[in-house]
Image 1 (spheres, rainbow, N blue to C red):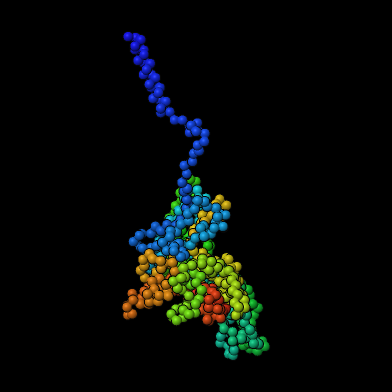
Image 2 (cartoon, rainbow, N blue to C red):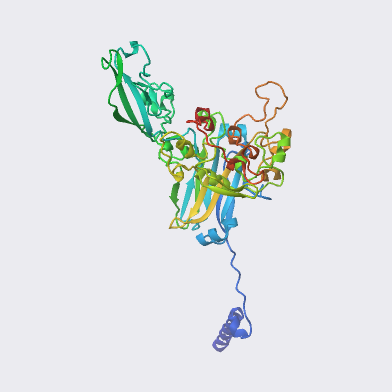
Length: 509
């Protein structure tokens, strides 16, 4: 019985060994030395840097890339790698411009919200430079001004008299013992009025960086050479510091960034370090213009069809457009360099076969406007000091940057906000720079009335944008060939006016 039991146990043990050998996995290379294996491909995950519209969907805003076929393309840079070399070498991929479309009433009452986002380890730092403009004209009133001080009783003396208590822009000229009355005095009443770009007395900012040399000439009555002779004394010199700053006149969504709102400067940037191995996301909100008691959309909408790079076309005069540009359905290319040049006062040359070479110097020959301050308008003031062009530049775009540890750019997104006069649907029409060529049927830029009556709400264009506020000259008036130049680069003749405040919104923003 015992032998039989041992045999049975041994048989079970052998069976278990055979069963185990059937489940053992053998290295394929040992099975067949001629067999090769293909590794399982690893999925490539694109990195991204993108702007996302997070405004209330009910507002019907639409954010997309600019350019042909991009009316519904996300505002996103997506690639397997980000680097400064790729940014410089493949700008079409890593340097993009996007447009946010908004209907005018929705924009003025709600402002907008968006998020800038980056995948983990894509950007070491993310920077945001908001759009800025000059609400008031900044300037520098530095010059010499003469003041006439008269002794008591001098006004009762007969004959030609000096302008007692008057300020003169130029040194007073003398005819014998009295000033030349042909010199017009400045229209000011006190020395505080000498700073022409100080708007604080009217509740505005002080944007005057000048210092006035005030030369006071006292006049007295003398008995020499004859009784009642008006005699000028020795002038005394004093100085009046205006105490302002050009940056005080800056306005725009830079005021909505907590870290920048109180900073001094015309172009300001918020710089944030990302966290290793974590996706980055930050929300920015642009205040509703009405929440600031503004009546236009210029605070938030930085788009101007005149600065898109679309050139003049004098044939458009037949449409009665002002200014008259060559907008048509094929104009889908936005050229951001035009707005950049415009804001930085950079010179640009145009070579015309019929007119030789014309240099249009932004510090010399263009109209003043708040989106691009011109030093020329300080230069035309007597003895004014014009600052370097770069010190007065603005930020024409909403700029978002993906940076490396050396603060070099790996990717950039520039954004323009365009407000529409009429309701829209997401449609390829969004690719064009303006549908003004549709005249009465235009949705973006429509200067016509709905019913043609006198009702306050009858106009399609109810809220001003920059194209409603600034209309540039036409090539016909300047001698520039019609197809050579975008509207905002048309040169303007020198203006001898001290102020060009009509080109700045001021309290009318």
